[in-house]
Structures are given as structure tokens and as C-alpha cells.
Length: 298
Length: 291
Ligand SMILES: Nc1ncnc2c1ncn2[C@@H]1O[C@H](COP(=O)(O)OP(=O)(O)OP(=O)(O)O)[C@@H](O)[C@H]1O
Ligand SMILES: [Mg+2]
Image 1 (spheres, chains in turn orange, brown):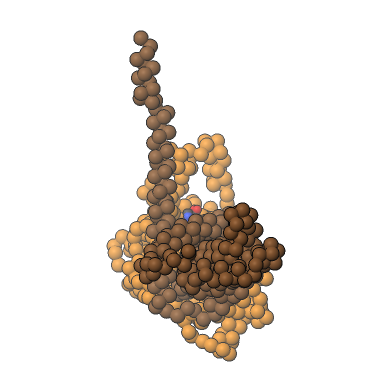
Image 2: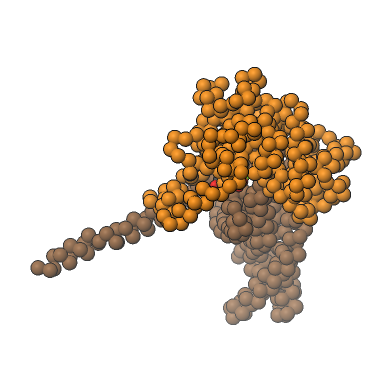
């Protein structure tokens, strides 16, 4: 493991030293056109850990997750999975690897043209794992796990509510018992009871020591309940020069007592200072926003 | 005294003009570079598609729905427009041919144009409008709602899964649609010329037989394969590269139609020239059938 990765990940649980890392982000930078989304991210996630990623809307959490499964290619830096650089893998290796991943998309991303049943069964069919009765049984088991009745499996995604679709997405991601689960806001849009059902589900999958989970959430209850470790990202555009974009990396219990005021405020959901900042911007005009200033000054 | 200075001004053409010139050049340059990039991108896209086409069987369950959509559902509209084109052709050529005293030759002209040009191009246009833009919209929506990302994340290749079946449906079924357009056009033209205008039935058909050969029919079908391929590749490419939002999807659908239509006509011209030279090579005296 590179020295700077160890230094920047500041892993207080010390797990990184005992278990070999499942995922390593090495100095990863992601840009869209000229806009920097992720800046020199170093993150080491040991096998079996459950990491919750928090941070305000638009700070690049989804992009971080997508770059781990190779859906977006980092502008520079590397993503290492089990010691292999996924940027150097060919299509066949990548497909083999993706079989071990489960990705829950922020908006479920169910296939409109298929029934719920075929959606959930898709990975099984794609990798030729099950057929017929067995496949049906596995699908309805998963649907039950996320609190959906069996009869939804003949419906189409358009006929379900947003929260139901989200749960179908979770069922689909879990069906292959992946060793890496990536949840993009799994409980957003669910009622409190259903959120807790999903939290419990995530806790249950976590019990298997080989499963590593990355969970993006805005729900602090989820974060506190399921996380071994919380990573907080800060939008690059508002970062001070030379500052690390990961402004918190530690156990969930340490969030409230963090030295960084931005972390405490985020956790408590207190708009105070941010509100002042936004008001000030209204007076100072758009040149305050680095992104816009960039665009208009050239 | 003032003369040199005015001359000087107009000679240096002022900063405004220069700027406008630069902008003009850079705008055109950008346009050309963009077009080249798009074409190159599309070629890579098509290359990947062919790789999948020849190395793996299409995914089960993806073929039939696409064939149904492209073939069966397009048939009525192709048949209908084909009939009208045949009738319009008869209607338009009649006045001119009558004035020249050549009504007896109408069958050849009408059927020759139908089989060589109008049938294939019409079928392709209908397909581009009906199926191509729908493909772009569907794939664009899948892109925007992350369904394509979901496919990839589950280890399925979106080109294999989504593009190959659409391509197969287009190139395998467009000949059938072309034959349909040809046939209905011929029927429509015959109906208008013989039944409505009262031309001689025997002359019309005999003249057609003398003028239109199997080669013409083949040339039309041959071209249609290319048209089908263009429609599938362009539409899928546009869908895959869709910009976010409903507007992006709409734009992808429109661009798919416009771009494939322009390409179809361009390729049509090139293929005509190519087929002509092939014909000349094999049948140097073949032109005699036109006398
Ligand atoms: N395709 C794209 N092209 C350009 N910019 C993009 C694209 N996708 C995302 N972005 C930008 O990247 C940034 C991060 O997006 P991302 O989706 O990762 O945010 P997020 O942290 O997941 O936010 P949220 O909590 O709202 O989901 C945003 O500022 C967005 O504007
Ligand atoms: Mg997000």
C-alpha cells in the first residue's frame, strides 16, 4: 500500500492494517470538462468493512461509487480492487469482477421493458446461475426480504411507487450475494419503518464477514446504525486550497465530537453558517462561486 | 489629406471585421471537427457492435420483440405509403408522357424508379422515422435513467444486449419492407395508370418487363441492407450518447432521424455509382435493354 494512501485515510479503527484492502482509491481525480468533482481522493477500504459515505448533495458521492465499479473512468489516479487495477482490466475480466458487485442505483434504474420478476432475476439469467422453479423461488425470497409481496413480480416498474422501485433495486443488487455491495441512498424516499427494514437488511448482509459495503446516505440514523466507518466528502468547489476533500473519516460515534465544524453542522442538519454563506453570495454576485467565475472569466 | 487614412482603415478592415472573420473560421472549424469526432465515434461504436455480432450469439429474448417492432409493426405504413408513391408517380408522369406521345412507355419508367430508388428509399425513410427515432428515444431514456449503467454493473454489455438485436432486426427486415414497398408501389402505379387513366394493360406490363430486370430489383434490395444498417447504428449511437433530461431524449430522437436520413441519401448516391460500374463491368452491352 502506498504511503500517502495510508496517511490520508487516517483509519482510526486500525482495520486497514489487519485485513488486506478490498478497495483502494489511489490519488483519484475525476473531472467533467473543466469542473473538478473529486480531487486526489485516497481511500482504503478493508475487506468486510461497512463504510457510510455522507456529504452534501452534488459533492460527488455517486461519482465516487460509480468509479469503483468502472462506470466512470477517473481522470487520473487508480482504483484498485483486490490488488488489481480496474483501469487496466479488459472487458472479460471486468465482467467477471462485476459479478461480485451489487449496485443499488439512486433512482433504482429498473429496466422499464421488463417485469419486476425479470428485473430481479436479470443477474441470475445473465450469468446462467439459475433457471425455472429455482429462479422463481430465489426471486420471491429476495422480494420478501425487502418487504414486497410476491404478486409485484408480474408488474412493470412504471406501476410501482418510488419507494417500491427502490426496494426492487435493492433486491436485484443482492440476488447474487455479492462480496461488494454499493448502495446509493438506499433509504431515501422510504417511510421510517421501511427505512429500518432496509437498515436491518444491510446489517444482516454485513454479518457475513466477506461482504464489504459502501453506503451513500443522507439519513444519519442509517449511518449510525450500520456504519463501521463514516467518510464525509466536501464539495471540491468550496474547499480551501490544499485541503483534503475527505473532511471526516472515522467511526460514526466520533461525528458529533469532530474538530471540524462543517462535519458537526452537517450531522445536525443545521443550516446556520451555510445559509449565511449563500446570502453573502447573493450580495457579492456570482464571482464568489469559483465554478462560475472560472467559466465567465476565460 | 483624409484620403489615405480612409484607405488605410478599409485596408486593415478594422478589428471588428477581423474578429468576425476569426469567429467565422473557428465556428466552421469547430463544426468540422465535431462532425469528424462524431463520425469517428460512430465508427468505433459500429466496430464494437460487429465484434459482438460475430463473436457471440444474441441474448435470448432480445431478438423477437425487436423483430416484431421493426418488421411487423412497420409493414402497414410501408405498404400504405408505397401504394401512394406508385399512384403519385403514375399521376405525375402521365401528363408529360402523353404530351410526348409515350404513354405506352410509362410502365417501364414507373416500375424502374420504384424498384431502383423509391421503394428502398421510402422503406428506409419510414423505418428511420418510425423505428429509428423510437430506438434513439428508448436507448436515450435508458441512458438518462441509468438503466445502461445498471446493465453494465450487472456484467451485461449494453452493445451486445441492446444494439446487436436492433441491428439484426433492421438489416434482416428492411429487405422485406423494401419488397413490400416495391410491390405496393407497382400495384398502386398499375391501378392508377390502367384503371384510372385507362392505359393499355398489355402495353403497360410488357413495357415494364422489357425495362425492369432482375438486376434492378437486386440493386434495390442490395442498397436496402446498407440503409437498415445505417438506421440501426445511427439511432442506437444517438440514444447511447443522449444528454440528460427529457429535452436530451427528444433531441436524440430527432437527430437520429435527420442524421440517418442524410446518410441514407448520401450512401444511396454512392451505391448507385458503384452498382452502375459493377453492371458495366459484367454486362458491357447490358445498356441495350433500354433501347
Ligand atoms: N454527466 C455529467 N456531466 C457533467 N457533470 C456531472 C455529470 N454527472 C454528474 N456531474 C456533476 O458531478 C457532481 C457530483 O455528482 P454526484 O451525482 O456524484 O453527486 P452526489 O454527491 O451523488 O449528489 P446527491 O446527493 O444529490 O445524489 C455534480 O456537481 C454534478 O453536477
Ligand atoms: Mg448521488
